Image (cartoon, rainbow, N blue to C red; front, top):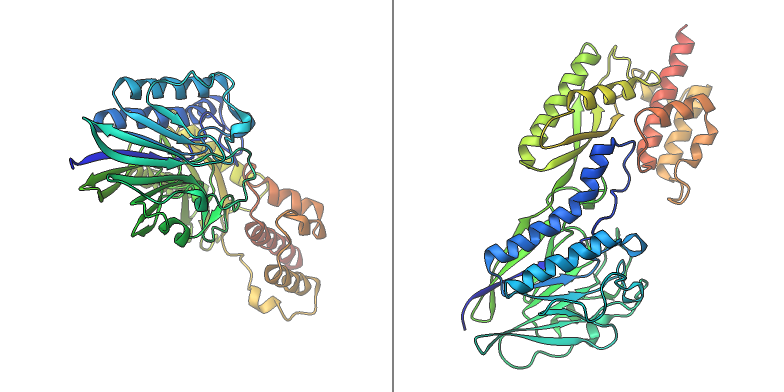
Length: 426
C-alpha cells in the first residue's frame, strides 16, 4: 500500500468577527474579520502543495446565523480548487453550522466534484480510491440542529475491508469544562469501531487524546477571542499514512492573527514613560515568538507600583492610547487591546484584616467574595456594594473586555484600599 497524506481541520467559523475585544480601529477590525478567510485559503494552498489525498472538515465551517455570502462563496471556491487538484473533501456539520441552517448561497447539488457533505441521521461512508486501490474509508455524520445531545459515536459502523478507516465527528470526548457537551462520547466509544484515526472537531485547542487509535482534535483554524483556548498557534493536522497505519502527525500553523497575554513587572520603574517602554519591549518579544502573524495583545502590570500613578482615572487608557499610536504602521499588524493594573497595593493588606474599621471590614468582605464568588451569569454584581465612583473607575481602567470576576475583585479592592488609606493619611 503506497504512503499518502491527508489534512484534518475543524472549527473554521469563517468570516465571523472576533469576540471579547474593546474598541478596535477600523483597519484592525477589517484585518481581524478577514483572518479566518485567509486561514482557509492557506489550508487550501497547503493541501495542494502537499499533494494530500483528501481533506476532512470536522464541523463548524461557519458560525450559525452569522454566516454570510462571502464566507459561503469562499468555501465553495476553495473546495473547487481542491477538486481541480484531484483532492477529495469530506465534510460534517457541527453545532454552529447544523444542517437546518443550510447553505443559502450553494444548492445541495452545487458542490464541486469530489466533495461529500454528510447528512444527519445515519453515518455516511465513502471510499477514497487512487489508481484502482482503496486508500481509505471515511465515515461521518452531521448535526441536524445545533443542540445535539445524542452520542453519535455509537452510530459509526465497524471497520471492514482494507485501507485506512477514518471517523470524522464533531463531538465532546470525555469532560471538556470550557465547551458545551454536544454529541458527548467516551474514548471507549471511539475505540469500538476499529478505526485508525478519529478526526474530531468542537474543541478549539489542538489535542491528541489517544494514539491507539489516534483520537485527535485539530483545534480551530484561527483564534477568535482572547480566551485561553483561543490563544496560541492555530491550524490543521497533516497526517502521513504508511501501510494503512498513522506514521506521523504534524500540526501546521495556518492562522493569520494570534492572541498573546503579557505580564510586565513594573517594580522600580520611575514613571509612565518607563512603563510604556517595558510594555513595548514585551510586545517586541511576543512578535519575535510569533513570527509573521499579526498580534492582539493584552498586558497585565504586576509587581509594586511605588510612586507610579496607575490608579488615577484614565491612566491606563492613556498608556493604551500611547501603545497603539507607537505601534501604528508596524507590520505584521500589532494591536494592543487592553492593559490591566494588577500591581500590589501600597498598603499592608495583612495588617488591615483584623482592624475593627471600615477598611478592615472591606478586606474581610473581599476575602469572603473570593472564597464564594458570584455566579458567572451575574459577573461583577458585587461591585454595587462599593461606591459608584470606585466602581466606575475600576471598569474604566482600560477598554471594554470580557468580564473576569476574580480580576475585577482584585482591581476593585486595590483601588478602594489606595483611596481609603490615602484619605485616612490626609
